[in-house]
Length: 72
Image (cartoon, helix red, strand yellow):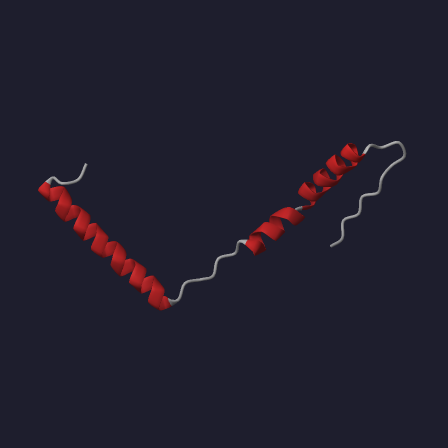
């Protein structure tokens, strides 16, 4: 999807750039580009399980410290 902005007669460069940026924002091109650029890969099943086990372990550890009165 090409976006074209032509300079009008007696239009300054600043107003041309402003008009261009407004058209870009309204078209949604920038949002689509950012979504594809920063797309995260899905974690594998093994990594999900590992993360869940680590969370459980940290939770138990925190509860133990809390009972001993060593947390703030």
